[in-house]
Image (cartoon, one colour):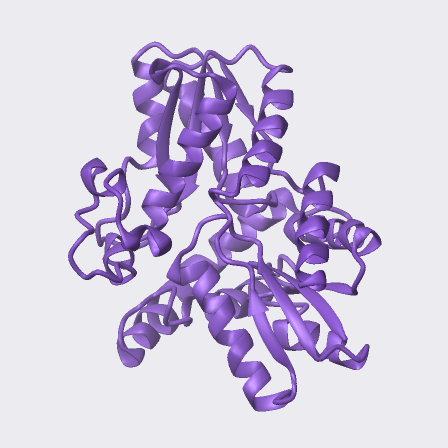
Length: 338
């Protein structure tokens, strides 16, 4: 019997400092998120970051929390229900960090009689800290607890034409409700070293436009290339000129160089260059979450408006969009038939 597992990032169980601290501990101690030796990672996370960031993150989560709890988990739950209703096989959800855990989700499928799992990490672009860590953990759980279960997973779908169509249509519909004169494509940031570590050729990546737009096997695992490719595909669908959009990267942590340009600085730069009406899309996320609802829609808006902007629009993620749910179900049903 076959089944599908949709996996998203995760959220704390509540906005309490203790729950946020526990969540951040699990998240930041992942060696594919902070890729330093264990002792150094433990010192940074447990000795410094958790003591300074937990309360601040708790306050940020309180700004976006709803009566249904975490927006990301609530959205993923609604999406999963829609996909399950359209799928020929059972579909359940899980979170890489927090609850419902991946082990819980896998066990739920196994308890239904499933022994072949098709996992869909809900990340359009590949990264060590997203798709890779989900796959590694799933394989570890199955090897340890469910050795008779087979697992495969959907690879990064940033260049899947059906996905681009759904994403572009969603953005277009939302833009029509605005008076935006410029669009910022803001992607979650990564340390530059993650990009180079994922370079399977060990020689192609120079983290500039020359490598990202020069054909290479490295692109299969290059987050930066895949982000820029996503933008290019959407820009073509929306028929945007070069002057009508910008790319940037958000959410950096620490002092090491991260992918640039930084979103926070881009807000200031665009406003100072005369952009008055800005729309922001976040195509690295398929579900609205802390990074889109607080970091962009609240903090980003504040930066842009204080720098001279006049109108700021946040374009929602795909969330539980009907066409997105239908596409996921179609992917699952196609896999089921093979």
